[in-house]
Amino acid sequence: MVEKPPFKARLKGDAPLHGFFVGIPSPATVEVAGWSGFDFVIIDTEHGATGLETLENMLRAAAAAGIAALVRVPRGDADTILHVLDAGADGILVPHVTSAEVASRIVGHAYYPPLGRRGISTLSRAARHGTGDAATVLRDQADRTTVIAMIEDTEALPEVGAIARVQGLDAIFVGPNDLAASMGHLGDVTHPEVTEAVDRIRTELRSIPGGPAFATIARTAAQARELGTHGARMICFNTTNILVQALRTLRKDLGA
Image 1 (cartoon, rainbow, N blue to C red):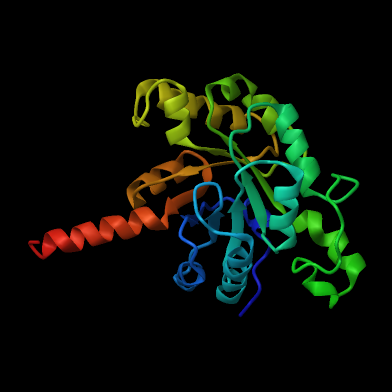
Image 2: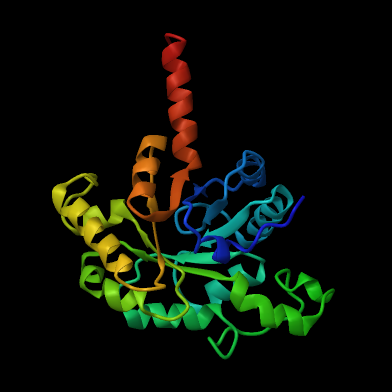
């Protein structure tokens, strides 16, 4: 298998990257996504039940299947980020980032000095358990770690520009469901106020030379293509939603 460039580098390209949230603790699901030719998975430890030991096996499955594996952490504290990255994740997705100050703390937790303050281990899975050259592992870490902030709250909207200018952030991921709820439109991601807010975020990101990529969720291939034409560089589906829809469709086709 030819080794792909790090996900962090591919995120800066012109072509959209497509992948999945994986909420069910399942290394096999990660393998299937990789063998099907997709670009990434986001293992969801915010809403999913995956624990640290299972997470390691899901990350191994991703490496074996040639797909990048990021982790959505439940919070942006130092311990949580350290454990996930030491387990070998290609990056982190941090929910509910509301200010540049919060984003700066996350960046500090994710990178080794001088970019950050992450605790150093040369024996972790990310460091190949000490079997490689420790200096090289530490030196290359910054180029292989993707850091993504999620915008999901009304109070974050006027702060998007400042958040996006925090050095070390690779993408801004808009979570439309939580954003809609925060704006008073629970369950209605297509409400004009919500779609206008998302458009403003996308426009803000485009105005920042070399700034973070715009990332978000899609439900269908048609929606993903539209998002790609409007500048999205990371488009995420959900394996649980796809499974549910496929089962419902099959049940309907069976006349059950």
